[in-house]
Image (tube, rainbow, N blue to C red; front, side, top):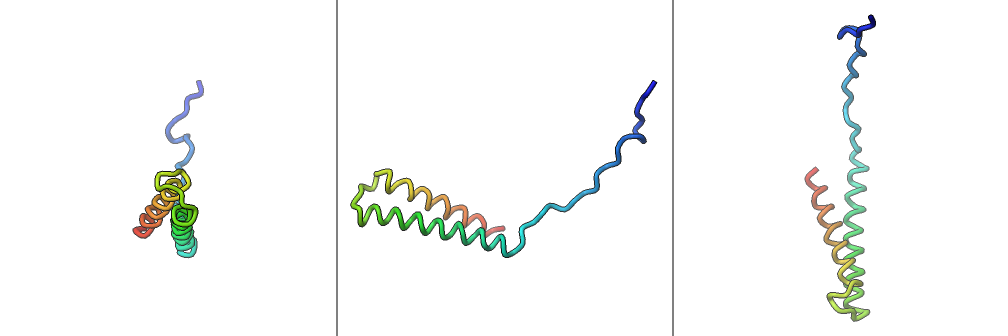
Length: 80
């Protein structure tokens, strides 16, 4: 009979530290979100102000929602 004892089981894996992003990568990611938010807000403002699209047009609403999302994401990254 081949029974496996607890002592014959595979050894536990050593605990590894999680891979952390360096300060440069984290700061760079934050700035990418900030620039994306500014860019989306600029596109929404351009479509509303220069192209004279209505405020409820998809050409204005979609980049405005993107600006809000990227802005919120950048704000959330400030706490890390």
